[in-house]
Amino acid sequence: MTPDVVDFTATDAPERFTESLRTTGFAVVTNHPLPSELVQSLYTEWEEFFTSGAAEAYTVGPDNQEGYFPPKIAETAKGRTVRDLKEFFHVYPWSDKYPSEVSDDAMRYRDIATDVASTLLGWIDANIPSEVAEKLSRPVADMLTGNSRTLLRILRYPPLEGDAPEGALRAAAHEDINLLTVLPASNETGLELLGADGEWYEVPCDPGSIAVNCGEMLDRATEGYLPATTHRVVNPVGEAANRARMSMPLFLAAADDVIITDGRNAEELLAERIAELRSQDSSD
Image (cartoon, rainbow, N blue to C red; front, side, top):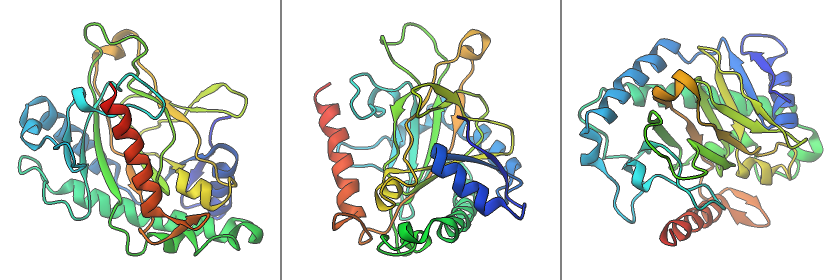
């Protein structure tokens, strides 16, 4: 149950992309407009930023989601009690906490990735059944209009040194809360999705490709037609365990006032998820 690999330039790309999301919750896209050399340079630049210690100056506060999350406060997946083995930096559209130690290339990447995502959402609108489309409060491509919560997360999974807590993974099994996630291929493998048969399947990670997956908001808005599939990042073994893994997901958010399901809007659903995660953290 691996996702389809879809050539962005192919004439049947919109149909194949939407069908892959429908059957697996994921699709892998190649030959897209997001420059792979930009992604690779950002991985190099931001790994140096993390390992230099400069990120510490941007550590988030107790009520803040903008800035640096060191491993000791990195998130715990919903329903889990052990923190993930990672560190990351949050950049929002309104962010004024952007590091001076790095270039503004991450902002350029975010803008290009958002444009690609807008195209992909348009493909969804053109290829979902009319009975699904009629239940949407607005076309999914229009749900992005006016949003201020689209999140660029720059992630580093450190090498696995020493004794990790029992059961800890680089990223434990979870679903994304947002509308759509665009994820350029990492410098290391490890991303897996949970199939309907209960088995885990590796998501292709060919250099230059992007993995795209549905979030819970898209799942709920389409009443499960486009599922928010459970996924995880497993711990590497052998020589790969000595290497860091870089990742750069862009979480595309619906505008706050977009009705997602049962009269509830995107702002309410996101606030609910954040409250759940903070409640877990406070009980650690």
